[in-house]
Every structure is written in C-alpha cells, then in structure tokens.
Amino acid sequence: MPRIYSCTFCGRKIKPGTGIIYVRNDGTIWRFCSSKCYKNMLKNRRNPTKLKWTAVYRKSK
Image: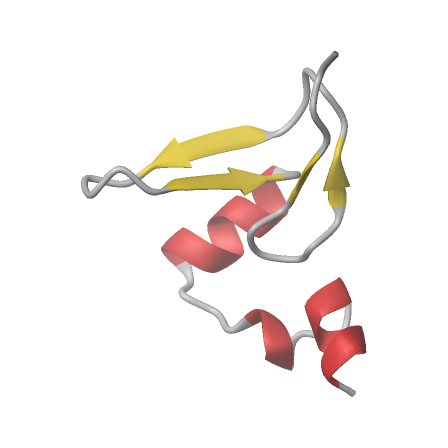
C-alpha cells in the first residue's frame, strides 16, 4: 500500500508517484508537492507561515 505524504513546505497531501524528494547531507528527507514549493523553500528561502497560499499559513491564523 503506497503511503500519502505531506509537503514539507505547504502541508498539502502528495499522491503516490508525484512530487519531488530532496535529501539533505544530514539524511533528513524533505518532500515537496510541486516545483513551486521546492523553489520557495530551497532557492528563495521563504517562510511558509508568511505565504497566504500555504496550508501552514491557514492553520496559524
């Protein structure tokens, strides 16, 4: 049975067979639902609690 993961950045559910997996040098695994989340977290270094389109923002407000 495939597992359903949540996006590390926005908190949305990731369906099996989709998304991007990023493994850091220390062994932690970050899973992203789209390239939008991947770029916002790694390239632009944005905080998900300050972006209105993320589920993390909606939970914090």
